[in-house]
Length: 329
Image 1 (cartoon, helix red, strand yellow):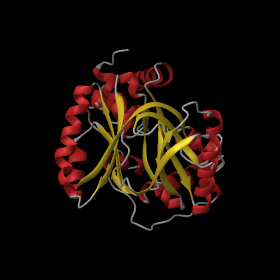
Image 2 (cartoon, rainbow, N blue to C red):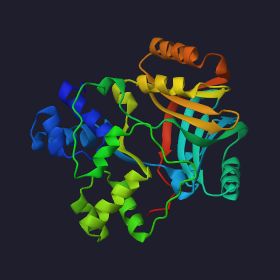
Image 3 (cartoon, rainbow, N blue to C red):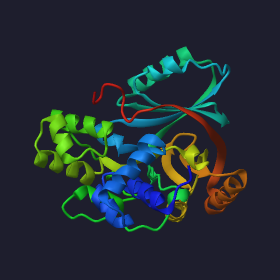
């Protein structure tokens, strides 16, 4: 399916903030509210260009976020067993230096050790590398080049959630923590299921009144616990392919690097890590030539700060969940 300009605008607005109302999206792209509803149903539910997604900042709940890269001796992987490991929130196969890239969320070192032990019992591992998330250089965004078209961003002073559209790179102050109660858990559970659920729908499903829900979601946004209401897009629908750059950097000019990341829309995520690899970059490209151009641009910006670099090419996503199973179920 080839996207027309109006469809690209709708997808871009949903990527910026999927809680924009159909009415406000309609005003921005100059079509009726009903037409917006039809287009969203077609693009999301039928054509499967993307899924709605709520992105949370896990450290505020006391979670540590780890990247685990694995080189296998045996490529015959029992993904069903791997999927069952609680705390293993993402499983991707890849080509390149490593065969698997996993994401682990834990609150203690003992939990981390137990998860790695379970992984070792399932896989035939030649070697692995582990790095811990420190902070964002560029938080996850899905405004991909094919939908990066000019469109007015809706404003709504009555709904604080709209403020997320102006917050691309901010994160909580180091050491910040939040406490959540059973009411929060009910709301978060529903937002994980349906990030676009209206306040009325959330009220019916949680049994909480509108004002309680509105106040608490506003607090999630203000504290940066919620990073984004957006999209998880199927890159292959756009004929885009993902490359991971695993880097060891020294004496990095972070301001210059962040300025570069802001301008490069092919880079949709970049994080500062602790470990042998202390930085990771996620980049999409449509062909080897484009990948080469972005690689060269990245090398020029990072220059002599690069001490080590390895590349991975995404093969398949086998698992993606926001939190360990049972946290909000």
